[in-house]
Amino acid sequence: MIDTVHVIGSGRVGSAIDARLRERGVAVRADGAELVLLCVPDDAIAEVAASIETGPWVAHVSGARPLAALGGHERRFSLHPLQTFTRASRGPEQLAAQFDGAWAAVTAETDEAHAVALWLAETLGVRTFDLDDSARTLYHAGAVFASNYIVTLQRAATLLFDAVGAPPAALEPLMLRTIENRFEVTGPIARGDWGTVGAHIAELHEQLPQLEHLYETLAGATLALST
Image (cartoon, rainbow, N blue to C red):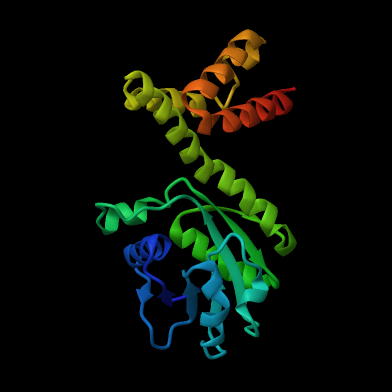
């Protein structure tokens, strides 16, 4: 459907998209491209889109910004890869492989735009679901919970393990098994061991007060979401 793509932006997502498109035989070039794909920071999308002459398809890969960020381009859509990306110590094959097994949110206003978005998704190797433009903020907040905040939790747990001389690396199998067990809640809250929870909070208050509020907030949320 599309033979040439211009990828604007060489960050984590742009680099991975560039690698996968080339791997799949799509010509990636700046001049005369049929699709211009904006892989730039959210705040830069509108400005970059405004600098592109009308004609080609124009799309962004942001999970948070609406299609309106693409301005007056009528041939437009959004495809947000629901994945976390890195460029650390990776060659083209490894960059491209980050799409394997991932999903992507598609937002399009016309059947033709939807078809081009699905072509892009198939080329990248991701499964898709449709996302209404008005739902993007809540959707993106959910993605942040799933990706960014798990990093925060790992770093908080690492501080606790460091404080008692336990190896933080021992946390990784525990976190991975929690995912493999489909996020089943275990531990003191699941058992109703409120004395243990209270002891945790008291010790955090004395030893690592910067984590006390986080623990209390998460304990309350875990209880509320588990019932």
